[in-house]
Image (cartoon, rainbow, N blue to C red; front, top):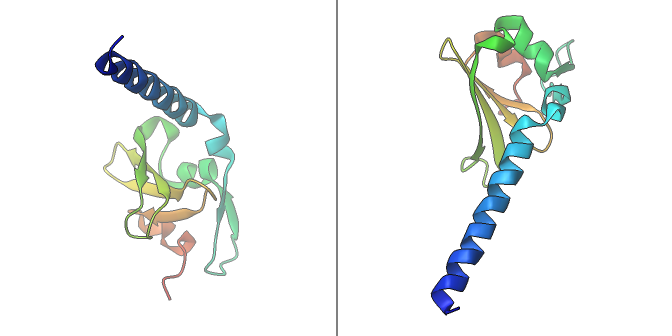
Length: 114
């Protein structure tokens, strides 16, 4: 084998590993059980992801779930869930905290920007 063949095989193995990890992460049921922490001091200090979704949008309305790099926070990743009505919610992948939402009813659950 020459260097080109070794490089192609190595890249194929790395790509396959990334796909497997991505599939495992996206299909993990643990994501539905993450707690959403309310840092604004409201009475409802903790909601599960599924409870929050059920307030406005049915789970069957989920169009996509993507893990994206968070450039605005200086690094890290967040999970963005997009719904059939065009709305979205963004969750920190490490804490499960709701960090962004297009829904007005979610604004009270978002971290304070002060």
